[in-house]
Length: 262
Image (cartoon, rainbow, N blue to C red; front, side, top):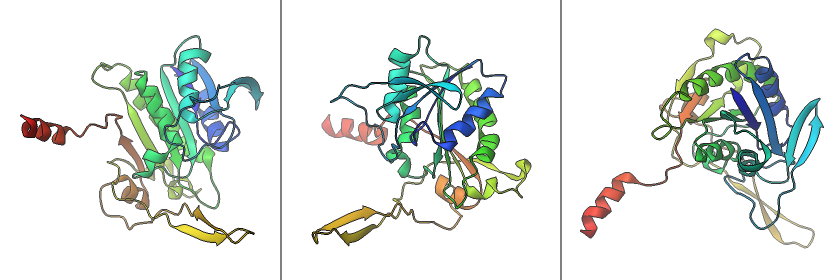
């Protein structure tokens, strides 16, 4: 497989390079291209750059030839597929992100958006995220996740793209990357995204001129395990896989509106 790797934490992020090492060691990967943002782009969702030109730069980072893009994660994939790569990739991997992208926060995620952008081109893609903790063991997270998601992506390549393009959002709880946890006891669950909003209160402070400013705390509400969703399954210690689609149509309401208007 020809893999395009990107992220939203920037070209120097440890999570990206943990994935690189796994991909380089996997015999199924025939080619690896790395195209990532120049700086941190968390929370930009599916923003793309229209009002200013993009000036991607070829560089060597950690002994690897890479493209560094002064834009968003979606820009990286779009620019890579359309202009920077002479051959389009077979699959796209985005991550590993520093922090979860579960529930409706997945809509805000630049990591997930990069994977979603790939599916616009009918390219199967996976977004990988690791729960924030005091120590972020990206190497262990990559060992647990990358080989398995490559298998999932490989299987999707043989399917009819007119009816199926794989977009998988994979989240890894901090508990499964602890040294005492064995590979065989890190459960995987296929679950839907949770639709209730995360708790994300603002801190209110004053600047030197006594003007109020509001700063997002980025502290999602941690809920007890129980329900069969990504948020709750992460709390229960499972690696979660959520298949996603970019079709925003409410098909149930579409049918009802057709009836109402006729």
